Image (cartoon, rainbow, N blue to C red):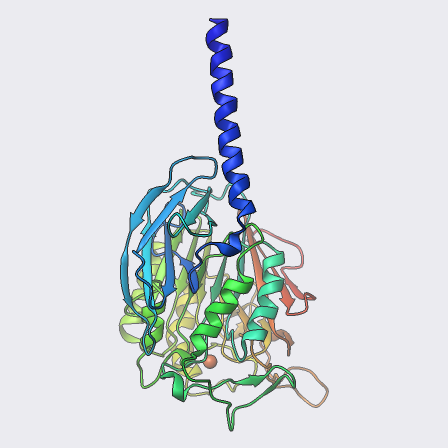
Amino acid sequence: MQYFHYTSYLLLTTMLFLVDSATTQAVETSQDDLYDPLALYLTWQQDPSTTMTIDWHTVDEQRSTVIQYRVPGEINWQNRSGSEHEFPYSKRTIHRVELNGLKADTEYEFRFGEDSKIYRFRTMPEKLTRPLRIALGGDTMHHQDFFEETNRQVLKYDPDFVVIGGDIAYADGLPPEKQGLRADPETRQRTDSPRPGLEDGDNLWYHWFNAYKNTLITDENRVIPMLVTLGNHETSGGEAPYFFALFAMPGLPGYNVLDFGDYMSFILLDSGHVNSPGGEQRQWLENVLAERRNVPHVFPIYHVPIYPSVRELDDRRVVPVRENWKSLFEEYGIRVAFENHDHAYKRTYPIRNDEIASNGVVYIGDGSWGTVPREIRRNDDGSFEEWYMSEGAEVMHFILLTIDGTHQHMLMIDSEGNIIDEYPQTPERR
Ligand SMILES: [Fe+2]
């Protein structure tokens, strides 16, 4: 018996040694020499505790659409194949694989074949057994440098995932020759007219995915998943060719809901870019909210604000959103709604029936992750013009939302890492 134990021990240590030396070898050959796709993007289309959707982009390569994945420490890789489709106005191919049957709240390794760099992802918990950290915002890229600056601050907080409420790459659904950079990183000013065009073969989306790869992947190669919504700068003439090709979620018709167990739901809305905020989308939204009455954390996120900080309340895009969604948010007990589009930081008071009310909805935004901030409307004495504005600042920023039990806590952090606001000041139950 003892002999058996001893040989088992020898066998085990030999195996561990082999595994260890294989790992060491992989490190020594350097990840830099291994295959690495042009772009990489993680999101969810279904249960975030058991699935992961992985997109990657290639050009002029004969590579199969297969992901290999395993829990770290396992010797064997599992293979999963997917589908390919065209990157609009580009020679690139988009590869997409959805993994399912994964273990909840677990880190996985994945790669694109034996010669590939190894990346990681983390599934979400099935129940809220640990606090979740989510980075939110919108309007990400007047310039790639700006997007990267804010991303670097985001990564310091090791978020579980990121949610972007529209105006992603500012490509407007246009072919590359009609696209242009929106800001000069030197002067940090907008360059709307004339806007410097792109070089041949370039595309603003390449810049955006480069930034994602440069700054939303941790030192341990964990890729931060993302959810996105439509903004006006995803479309031209009501069409959003890049958006629907590049992002599996929200998918058609352009709005969707993602449930995290029975503890959290993100409602990804289209504030009038491909779909009207009224009609079918409004009916769908009401059903979604009604079905989630008992979910403690329900967050709508969308592009055009209901209570804007910069634009006027009667703005042509703002009015239909407010007329269709505000009363639903109030009726179904939404605590916080995330808005974008105005390129400033804002937090409203809690609002119900167009009045400040402790059981109202707080609107937080206003979308300046990577854009040149605009001036918030203020009176001569510096106070806000609008009664609903509680906090505001003209800075690039993101919102770090932590949910823990029934608590929701938000830290607002600018692109230099300063904390510019906190809500609520002391976490409290409602
Ligand atoms: Fe916008």
